[in-house]
Structures are given as structure tokens and as C-alpha cells.
Length: 371
Image (tube, rainbow, N blue to C red):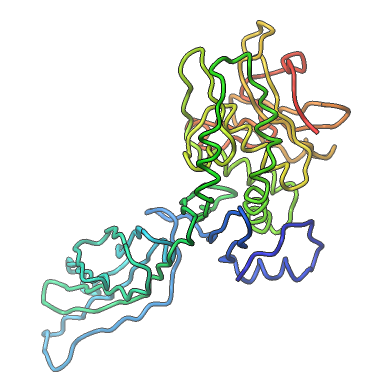
């Protein structure tokens, strides 16, 4: 089902109802746009997972197991659909034997390959629907079967698929998204200086060629939070923090990336992630700023972050973890919330919007770029 064009949503609109009924809505395709499929699922011990329709067959036949009860085969799969090549994690750890016997697990993946063990991963390399079968056997030879479908699709011509996972609001979000290959390579091939003082980071946000792609991604995030503008700001920050691994440039050199480069590489430093986050918020029609801040009190900017416009009541929504403080700043007569886009593992992978780990004051905002 195609995701509708992102726009402010009214309470009770059909678009909101559609998102509620179908969290697995597909992303729209468009020129230079990002395409893909979003899945919103609860976290589980093995990772994200969902319970799917399952066929269980207990094989007893005419055999007499002397009162032995056959085991019960149960398994989960994540993801259960996606694009070539698709790696799926299978987890049968919730299978059990009523008699408490140890169990053996045997898998048939539907492509001629087999596997053993309660937890196993398998990569499907051809686009088609597979019937994956699990056979669970107890010590007395009693067994049961469980089967389910895995749907593998071809990647559209000219696109590469990227797998994103991040945490937000107590849930794991899993998303396979497409980026136009030629556009990513175009940005990677653009010349840029290696000296910090020569950079105009705003131009990386204002570059128009990637606007359709960023708007397509923005539409998915917008629908994910059902058109809640504040939740969009927060979920998008969690997305950037969660899917982009921090990686520094060489000392005394800078090579800032365009947003699509950062998404494709899934690595970047503070200016890369701030450019990406500011671009995604801008794509949703929300005012946002690149902030160049002084974190060591020498009146020279040494860090890049984002400032996002928020309503005056936003302070009551901010709940910051230990070691940070509330970061709300007035920029151009607009209240903004500090967005630290390079949150580390000590914050659990997510530092909420409006939380400042640097303990900045307004004098530490050396400069900013915005609408």
C-alpha cells in the first residue's frame, strides 16, 4: 500500500486511519525519490520480531511413543519480507516439549539449503516467496513441524536498498529503503576542499537535487508518527542517531557529506549528521537551523548540532537523562530545541530532543544557519 504524500494531518483523517490499520505501509516511488518498506515492531530478546500466522503439524501417526507427548514447534522471523539479498533471523527458542525433553531443530529454507539450531540466520538471494519449514524433534523421536512464508522482492532498477533499524518510544523500527544509485554517486563525486575554514555547511542542506528523495523519506517518518509534528522531530532525531555510526574526519581536515552520502555510508561526524537531520526536518516544512557551537569556552566553534523550532510549551515535554541539561534557545525570536545528532552508547543510543550534553549557554552559539 503506498504511503500518502506527507502533509499536516487532521484528527480522524483517512490517512491517519490508514496508518493505524496498516503499519507496514510501503513508501511511494517517485523521481529521485526514496522507496522502501517500513515495519514498526516491538523489541524482543533476539532483536525486533513479530508473531506471524503459523502452521503447526504434530506428527504422531500410528507410532506409539509410550505416552510421550510430541513437542510444539514455534518460530519467529525478522524480517519476514524485504529485498534481495535478504538476511532473515529465525528464532525457535519459544518451541517447547510438554515432557521437558531436550529438542533438536532442523530447518528447510525453501531454496535447497538447510540449517540446524534454535536460532539461525539465512540469506535469500533470489526474488520469490519461500516456504520455510522448521522440524522440532524430542529425545524419543516425536516431532512437529512449523512453516511460514518469507517474501523476497527484487530491488527496482537504478536503486540500492539500505536496511535501517533504530529505537524510538520503546519500539524497534525496521525499514528497508531505496536510494537512487546515480544520485548518490553524483554527490560522492562532487569536489570539496579539505580545509575547515572554507566550508559553507548550509549549501549541503540547500542543495535541491536530493529534495524528492529527502521528502520521500520524510513522508515515511511522518506517517510513522501519524502526523504528530513534535513526535516527527523526535523520531527523526532518533533515526539519525540510531542509523548513523559516528566516524571522525582526519585531524585538521573536513569532508562534509551531503545527506544521501551519509545515509548510504551510514557513517559520519557531527556536521554530517547535523546536515542530515536539519535536511529531514526542513523537508517536513519545519524550521530548523545548523548550529556552530563552542564547547570548550575559547569562543571558537568546534562542534555542529541542530536547533529545531518548537512551541513555547515544549519545555514541559523535555525529560533529559543524567549528565545533560535542558537545551532550549531563542534564535531569530523563535524558541528552538537543541538536537545532538551524535549521541553515543552511554545515552542508550538516543539523546532526546532538547537535551544538551555540553551545558551550553547562548553565548556558546557562535553562529547558525537557518531559514
